[in-house]
Image 1 (cartoon, rainbow, N blue to C red):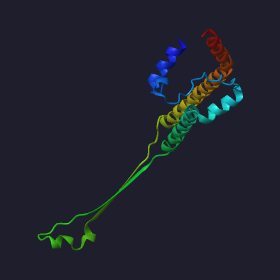
Image 2: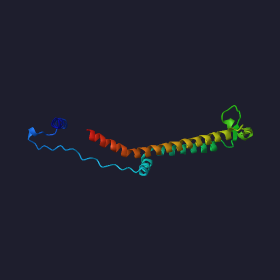
Image 3: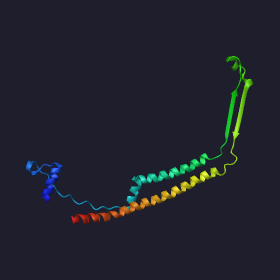
Image 4: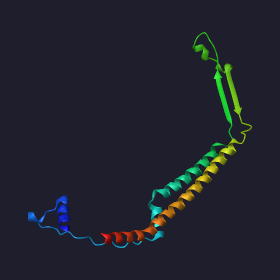
Length: 171
């Protein structure tokens, strides 16, 4: 059985066989892998450093803080000042219409200021703050879930190694 498996492997890998007269490299069973020792705290530190999820947590918090700052910055006192300046004159010839324009000036100024915004500004800022608080709570929960997943996986490594040893004995 081992000999036929060796012939099949040599054929598949196009290794020289004993019939070709070439030197035949010996096939050997590999040495067992060393026992894995995973420190859960170190695994958590490595996961925080190398997983994209930690950057996603920070990004979500920064976006929520940005939304609050934007709501505060864009919903303040709002007033509008408009100025119009115009000249008007008529003449029988085109060049004559541009002489002595000072007598025909018109100026208009308009100023608008909302007296009551019915709490819209305050509501917009408060909505952004509540969304930020909700995002922070969700991110905190996701971070805890992330930590628990990493710690659980690190704790399962010895059990998985034991299962691999049992499977090797069964074969």
